[in-house]
Length: 438
Image (cartoon, helix red, strand yellow):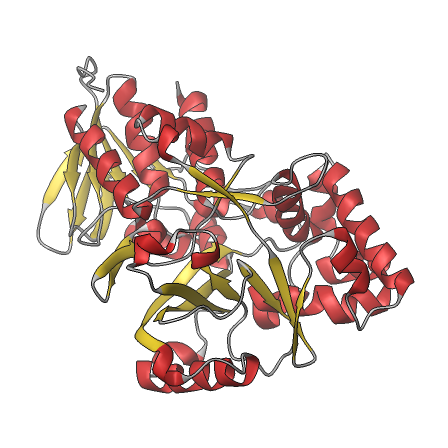
């Protein structure tokens, strides 16, 4: 896929994650002259890959749903869609010190700790949520109030509150109902009719393969890709916008699109108005500390295990080997242990050894057959700004993409209004933006 530039205007995209890469792809396809800048050594952002022992695999867990049409289109454009593998997965719950399978309606009805009326109200909430079209009304209601009203105190205390806390921590009381609606709507859309099986997909080779192919297509299409370029300032003067980087590189462009997190964008754009800067700085982010483990044997048979017991130091167990063939991992099992926390959480200052000991001690207690000697590799990723929290009236308080600085736009994952942060939603955000700019 090659495109000959026919526009004399120069475009700079600052931030080489999935959002920046999609913008670069679309602008390239329009014949624009595009330069893509990324602070890290490789493209990909939150979707990048890293070395785990002798393997190269995703730094954070990702899954593709049957309903992820935007991602499917990109995979087709990159010539990778036919290689996707689709697998039926199972869901587990760790509650009151025990592990339960909740992978179908019958297992859900057998799930202990909830009265039948609570289970019926919980099921109704999920079904009702999947039918809601006007999500903006939900922005005026707190998620905690909304879920408690629909599902009752029993289901809220046992299910919803722990799940909200697993994503939002102490910020669960700040999120609007639209946050939970987006999560439920996406997962519900992933289920097929009939047996309602969960079919999740993955690309053999993981996101490393996807990102390498994507970068090749961009470069073949004339996009200049610059990694190791951390933005320092964006200043408009004399009809051009100068972008400066911490490595000393400077260049001027006609149009600049920043896809970095809002607090970073506010810092590097000194010409923003006080109102714009305030809007960006008021966006509240959740961070993540995510451990990747290579194990000699599997923990269980569930792709995701939701945790309702508050003593567990991580907020979920994602066992990728229930989805991805073990041959991708040299016959080992790959497990992610995420903990979502605010950017100022003390865990970001803790050593890998401290986190490792605490996480492994929990696994020993949760899985009687697990032994510390099963661990072949343990590696921790820390990211302070992963996704923006959908607070009350979020869309009304969000800063516009087009800034007061001529030729400068700020578009990042905080602009995902009717979904949650995932690769498909990120691609959709970029696609919509480029259509609006055309």
